[in-house]
Image (cartoon, rainbow, N blue to C red; front, side):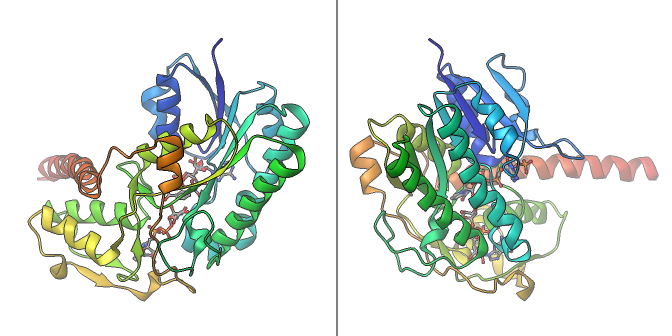
Length: 333
Ligand code: NAP
Ligand code: GDD
């Protein structure tokens, strides 16, 4: 019988890769999409016409739309929807908590009440470790440093509680940073690859960044999506760190990207304190031994192949932008 999966956050970076992987495996996929004033489905446009994909309007702040999804009695429910920007969470703390923490309780309650055999996976975050020094693993103490991280810690514990109290199959994928050509443009890696490729083609002069010393463990979002499937398909529910185990600073990321484009990053990157955070997470590097040894997860991408893919995609975007700009100039002449 065809298996079914619901995904919140399907229009986001990682949700789009997850949907692709599940469709490839023959799943019927139901995705929750938000109403927006302009189109927000770019990341899934290429799979939009797949007959096994159905999009349903809803929101993590709206219990009835979540309960509505559960009427499909899905085998799996992946919760990837979130206000996912750490810095923005300082500006909208209450909203971030409502969507990222209370939203998870809404989903868990909907599962408990309407479809208790549905397996649930929560997109937990390495941000929860905050100022606990690396390497971080499943039993590292949480010390959240932002409203986003506080909400993710609350959600993490709700998942564990529903597992213990109601015997739900509910797991946490504690993912470290993951990137791709589909990464939102305001996250640092994409901001760098987009700006560096535009600079290369003469479309931009400078790139303004915040804290260059922060260190992160960057994976490819597709590898993280495949880890999520392994976690939800495991024999029993549990919590797993998903990480590459390699750490690089923002400065290093910028240096590598500009270097690969034949540019010296120092000529273009400037620091603007506007991008500093009220409290920062200095260093994240995950130990994913548990996931690798018990579930056999192995990433396909390396740091270098991730960067190459992001550069090549943004270079293509910049080339299209340049052609358009040159044509407009010709028309004006
Ligand atoms: P993303 O690109 O920002 O996508 C977030 C998704 O959540 C989008 O589909 C967005 O919809 C949706 N969303 C936002 N608010 C919502 C709401 N109120 N109700 C329903 N859906 C809502 O994030 P991502 O990088 O794919 O990350 C996916 C998940 O993993 C998030 O929960 C994030 O917190 C978590 N996570 C990410 C990383 C990482 O490095 N990427 C690491 C650890 C954990 P719109 O498209 O309409 O905005
Ligand atoms: N966004 C951004 N923009 N970050 C910058 C900039 C800038 O101009 N300059 C420096 N940084 C630094 C941030 O201060 C942070 O230390 C680091 O770059 C990474 O920032 P982001 O790319 O915004 O990601 P994040 O680590 O804060 O959060 C991401 O990863 C989490 C997992 O650790 C998000 O995807 C979260 O949703 C996710 O949970």
